[in-house]
Image (cartoon, rainbow, N blue to C red; front, side, top):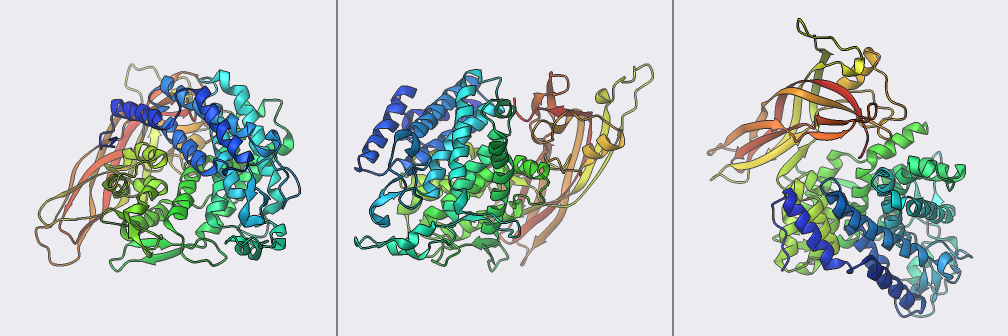
Length: 608
C-alpha cells in the first residue's frame, strides 16, 4: 500500500510524484481525454451528473504535483502540465455552449459552463457557480503556468491563450449574478432571481431551499470555488503572452486583470468578516464559521475543506493579485494573513482532529469518525502555520486507508512544512544598509548595479513554541525572513532594499515589482545570529528548559537577472533555527536575531 513518509529529498519527491501520477491518471494524454469524453456522454444522456467534483479535485491535485516538481525536474513537470492541458481542453470541448447543450432554464440561454438536468430545480437544465469554478480552475491554472514560463513551453502558447479567453467568457456570463458595488466592501455571487419561480412539486428535497434563497448570497464554498479560478485567470490574462496575442481585447483584459482581482479581494473580505474568532481556555486562538451568511448552521468538514482549499490558491497568488489591485489604483487588498492562517490551523488541531478521527463540523460538533478522514485535503496547507497539521493529516489519512488523489497530492505538496515552522509575525524589525567600500587596489564599480552593500538586519520574531513533555526536549526547526523589500507589490516601500534603491537612485527595470521583476539580495558573505528573547513557564517549573541550538541561512534561491539576462545565485531566503523547549507548560515566545550580509541588490524574473 502507498504510504507517504517524512523524507522530502529530491529523489523521494520525484519518485512519489511519479507514483501519484500512475495511481490516478490514465496511461496517456489521449486515454485521459477519452475518459473525460465518456463521462460527459453519460452526462448529456442524463444517466449521470457531469464529472464536476471528481475531475475538479483530480485536476487540482495535478496542479499541486506540477508545482511541486516544476523547480526540480523540468522534463517531468512538462509531462504533468501537458496532461493538465489535455484535461482542460476536454472540459472546454464539453462545455455547454461548445457541445450544444440545452439553455439554462433559469438564465434563458446556453451558458459557457457545465450544466445538467437537476431534480432539485424542477428537473430543468441548470448551471451553478460552484460547479463552474471546479472546471474553470484547471483551464486557468494550466494557462497561468504556461504564461509564467513561456520559454519552457512554446508549443503550448496557443492552447493557453485559447483557454484564457474561454475562462473570461465563463466569468463574463455570470457577472449579472455578482454583487460587486463600489460602496460595499464585500462582494459575492447571488442565487438567480428565477429560482423564486421554482415549483418544487417532484418531491425532491432541497428545491425549497433554492427557491427561498433567490437573490441571496450563495454559500462561502460556492463563492470561493469561482474565486480560486479567477485568481489564476487574472495572472494568466496579465501575462505578456496573452496581452501580446490577438485574442486579448481591452474589455476582456479589464475584466480579468482589474475587475476580477477586485471581486476576489472583496469576496475574501466577505468571508473573513463573517468568521467568528474564538479562544481556547489556554489562550489558543481559533476560528469558527457557518455554511453561508443566510443562516443554515455551522460549516461541515467537507465544505470547510473546500473553503480553505480555495483560500490556499488565493494566498499563493496574493502578492501578484495585490499588485494588480495597486496598479489599478485600488486600495483593497487580499485580506489573508499568517495570524488568520494560524487560527485555521488551531481549528483543525484543537477542534476538528482528535486521536486520528475527524469531526463532522469545523467546530468539533457532530459525529466523529474515521469515515470523515478523506476530508484532510483542504486543511493540509495550514502546515505552513503549524507543522503538526501535516503530521495529523498524514496519520489520519492512513489510520483507516483514506488516500485519494486530492489528499495524496496535498500531502506531497506541503510535506516540506512537516519539519519546519514558518514564522512571519515580527515584534520589531530594524536594518542598516550602506555601500561596501573597496579595498586599496580594488577597482570600484562603474555601475550602481554592480555595487556591493553591507546589510544588517536585527529584530524579534514570534516563535510561540510550547513544550509537550517533561521527560524530553521537544525540538522544532523554524524559519523566518525579515522584510527586505516589502511584499512583491508596486505599492511596497518598506525594507532596506527599497530604501537603498530610492536613496541611491538605482534604476528599476521596466514593469511592476511582483509582475515583471522581484527585488532580491544576492549574498556573497553572511553572519547570522539568533538567541532567546522571551520565555515563560506557566506553573511550577519541573525540568523545564529552552534552547536555541543552531542557526543557518535557509537554502539560497536562484533566478534570472532581468537586467543582464544572466543567472543569479545565492538569493537570500531567510534563516533557519533549531529550537527546543521542555516541560508541558513551558513556552518559548520570541527569538531575537542579528544578521549581517554582504552582497548585491538584484532584480530577478518572477519565475524561470
